[in-house]
Image 1 (cartoon, rainbow, N blue to C red):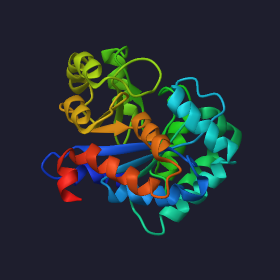
Image 2: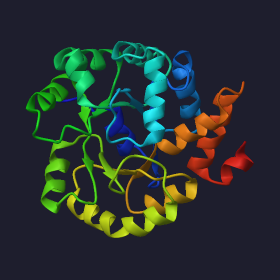
Image 3: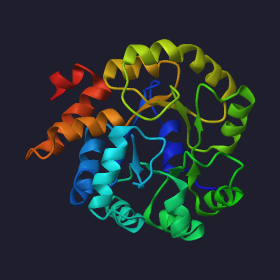
Image 4: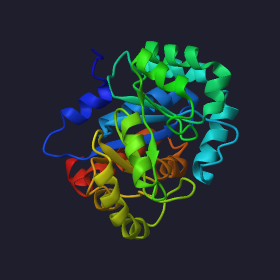
Length: 274
């Protein structure tokens, strides 16, 4: 029997319907020597899952924020091997679920089987490859099964009901619900919440085998709570990277980022708790 992953265990053991918070950062941004330290701070500040972006030179689905972070990381020499080394170091002191997210090209260049073997060896829990829909690369599914990696797929407002059911069946860990179509990036929370309610109703009627996490456009605790009201949790990426960009290279940029994340998770309660 397949061992329960850290991601599945996280959702199975959450209490009182708490919202799971997943944070996306680009590996190596803004300083490749401090990614592990930054992730430790994010976990202390309330992150439940870390999505570690694998930078790529042609990030077509990403907006300017993540494009910028990818360029900074690549300019510092970040590679898939260096990301694996970061995960290995994180695993010496943390069991936070880690998901690698990125485009298929660098993975194919590395080699599918070597990639998944090494990912499992260092302690990666899941992968999100947005440009590989379920059914397009059967070897990927087989390798996820072989090495115990959760394949996480995305649904969007233009995903049909039948397609959602297929994605639910193919996914493990959670289904990534993209709240709006288009490239990644922080958006006005009111704009997102107005467009998302009917979409979420459709998602929850078609996704039953996996938890649902919603992302794209969340900038604040209020956004997160409003947009994730009908699902299991929320994902923040561009707003986090924008914040890091605004405080780096202050001496205490990591601590400032932790304070921002605490407020994302808890709202005004974070101020009184600090």
